[in-house]
Image 1 (tube, rainbow, N blue to C red):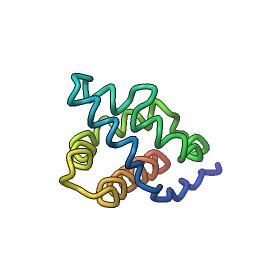
Image 2: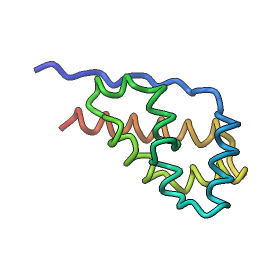
Image 3: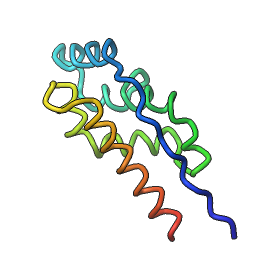
Length: 105
């Protein structure tokens, strides 16, 4: 049996303009969950950069679930309490651990 090696995810450049729009949306009354996993949300933006996850068995909806579980850190980044590097690196770690656990059985 061949086990796929999880992809190594890169830290994408910070989406500063989009982050501003996402934060404005939340302040304007949009549910944070929609900003996280909606069609133009954070998970969708990340999926467009990390499509290699599909080869490891994680689809866009699965990535959305991980991002949703990581919502506190994503909020702290949007609110300016965490850097993009801190938040996204932590998310990459979480994704990598989930993929590794899935391949282990």
